[in-house]
Image 1 (cartoon, rainbow, N blue to C red):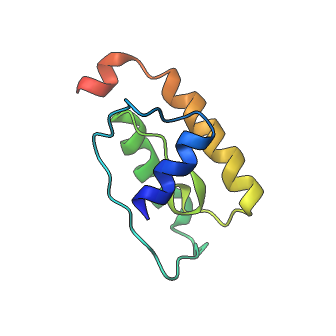
Image 2: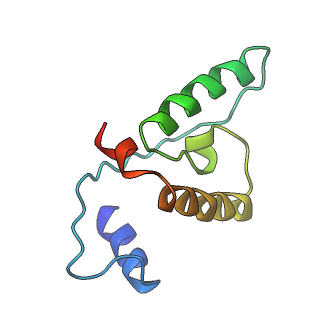
Image 3: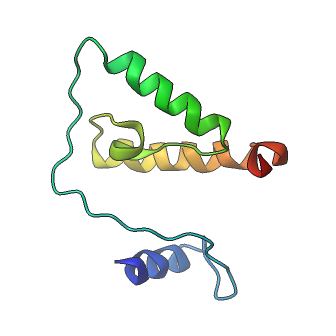
Length: 94
């Protein structure tokens, strides 16, 4: 799975042959649908705030834990990439 993802990233110019991938941990999740209950907003808000404080931008169905269409997931990935470009360096170094 990792090589497939790297090949796709190279094909769209987001990864170059000399790029260094520091962490790679692909995970296949068989089922994963959000359950919108009374605790959903607070629980996901807490998790997302924690991630953002550490320079991470959750994206897509599993990152945001939201029921998104394929198109919505792609747009959300683009949003996350733009958000990462504006993260101050201090947030990345702890």
